[in-house]
Amino acid sequence: MITLLDYGAGNVRSVVNAIEKSGHTVHMAASGDDIARAEKLVFPGVGNFGKMMQVLGDKGFVEPLLTFLRADKPFLGICLGLHALFEKSHEAPGIAGLGFFTGEVRRFETELSVPHIGWNGICVKKPTPLFAGLGEDEKFYFVHSYHVVPQNPDVVLTRTDYGQSFVSSVAAGNIAATQFHPEKSGAAGLAVLRNFLEPGPEAAIDLRDPVRTHLAKRIVACLDVRADDAGQLVVTKGDHYDVRENGQVRDLGGPVDLARDYYAQGADEITFLNITGFRDFPMQDMPMLDVLRRTSEHVFVPLTIGGGIRSYTDADGRNWSSLEVAAQYFRSGADKISIGSDAVYIAENYLKTGKKTGESAIEQISEVYGSQAVVISVDPRRVYVHDPADAPDQVVIETAEPDPEGRCFCWFQCTVSGGREGRPVDAVTLARVCQELGAGEVLLNSIDRDGTGAGFDLELISAVCDAVSIPVIASSGAGSAEHFLEVFTRTSVEAALAAGIFHRKQLPLGQVKQYLQNKVEIRREGI
Ligand code: 1PR
Image 1 (cartoon, rainbow, N blue to C red):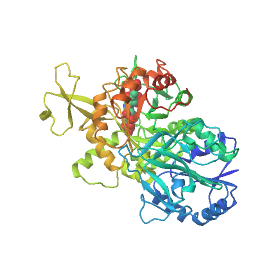
Image 2 (cartoon, rainbow, N blue to C red):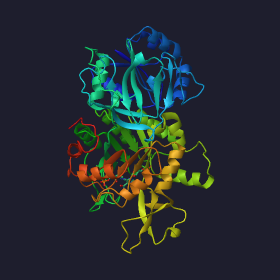
Image 3 (spheres, helix red, strand yellow):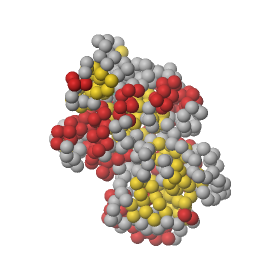
Image 4 (tube, rainbow, N blue to C red):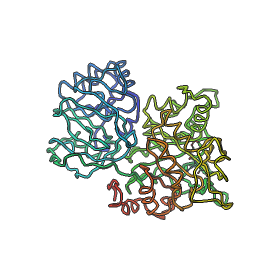
C-alpha cells in the first residue's frame, strides 16, 4: 500500500490515478501516525512554498516526515515536494523547509519564459532504478518557477537545461524527488512511478555533458464544451465563436472520449473550455467536474479547465469566491484553470487604479496554487483604424493585413461573454497586466481566425509575446500541420492549440506531431 501526503493544494487526484494505474492502492495520510506507519510515501506538492510549510506545520506533519526520511524509507517527492526537502526557498523568505538536504531553492534566472512550463528532457547523473527502461530522449512535464540548488553534489540524480542547467531530481538512499510531474508525463512518467513502486535494476547513467536537453513545443487539444439543446454536455466548435449549425449546437462528440483519443495520439495538454460558463454557475455545472474526474483517470498529461471561473452568488444567495470555484476544479483533476471574461474586468479595474487589491481571482488563485496554475484566456478581435491616434488608449500595430477599406493599423480589442461584448482594453495590455497580477500563462485566441483554418494570427501573437515573459499558447485558425510549423518558427510561442481540425477529423493530432518531427523540438510519445 502506498501512502500519499496531501496538504490540500493542487491536483493530487492525478497522482492517485497514476499510482492506481500501476496496480497499487493509495492511502491518504490524515495524521502524523499515518506517515509513521507508511511503507512507501509519495509527497506531491504544487503552489506556494510558504503556504505548504505552514500547512505541514499546522497538521503536525513536519516531525513525522523527518523521522520517515531519516529512517531511509522509500519516499518520492514531486515538484514542491522536492523543494520542501531543502533548508529554505527564495519563494518564501524567512520560512524554513524540512532541511533534510542542505541547500536552497532559487528562482530561475533566464531570458526564457518563467514559469518553465512544458516537456523537457533529463540527463541521469548517477545509477538509479527510477529511470530504468527509459530512452535518453524521454521528456517529462515541468511546471515551476523555482529549482533546488543542493550543497552536496552527490544527491544530484538528474540535470535539465532551461537557459541554465538546473537539478531536475535528487536521490539519496531510498529518498528521491523530482521537479517534474511523473503523473502528468504520459507513459514515461507512469514508468518512473512504477519504478519507484516496484524498483528493479539500476538504469545506466547518462554520460552526455554539459546538459543538452531542450524544452519541447506543446501541441494542445482544445475541447469547447457546452450543454446541447437536450442538456447533454457535448464538445462543440465555433466558427468565429458561433457554435450553431442549422440552428442546432454542433455536437462533435463526448468530452471524455475525445480527450482520451487526443492523449493517445500524443497531445501534450488537454484544455476544456466551458463556453457557457459566463452564463451558468459552474457549481451547478457538476457534469463539468465529472468530466474532469473521469478524464484524469486515463489521461496523464496536464488538464486545463476554463469557463465561469469567477466569484458567484448562487440561487440560494450563497457567495462563492473564485478561489472556491477553482478549488472544486483542482480537486476534480484540473492542473490549471483558465480565466476569460473576469480577467478583462480585473484588468480594467487595475488600469483605473494602478493598484493591486489582492482580491481578484488572478491574485487569489495564483497566491494559493501558484502562478503556473492560472491561465488567462483572451478573446480578441481586430479593430481597424486609419491612424494610431484614432485609438490613443490602445496598443496599435501596423498590419500587413489591411481591412477592405485599406486601413493599415489595428488594435486587438478584448471581448467578454464568448465574444459577445467588446471592452475598452486591448489584448497586449490585458496580457501584460494579468502577468503583473500573477497569471502564469496566456491562452491567446482570435475571434477573427477561430474555426477558419486560415492559420494563426501571427501579428497578434507576436505583439503579445513581445509584451510578456510568461508562456503564450497560440490558438485559433489552425488548418494544416504547416500552420503549426509557421507559428513555432515565426513567433516565440511555447505552445499551439487547435480544436476544429482535430474534432472534424481533418488532421489527426498525431499526424501534426509526425510532421513537426526534426523540424521543431517536440515530445515524441504517442507517435
Ligand atoms: O469568460 O471565463 O467564462 O471563459 C469562457 C471561455 O470559453 C473562454 O476561454 C472563451 O475563449 C471560451 N469561449 C466562450 N465562447 C466561445 C465560443 O466559441 N462561442 N470558445 C468560446 C472560444 C477558443 C478556442 C478555440 C480556438 C481554436 N474558443 O477554444 O477552440 O479558437 O479554434 P480552431 O482551432 O477551431 O480555429 P469565461
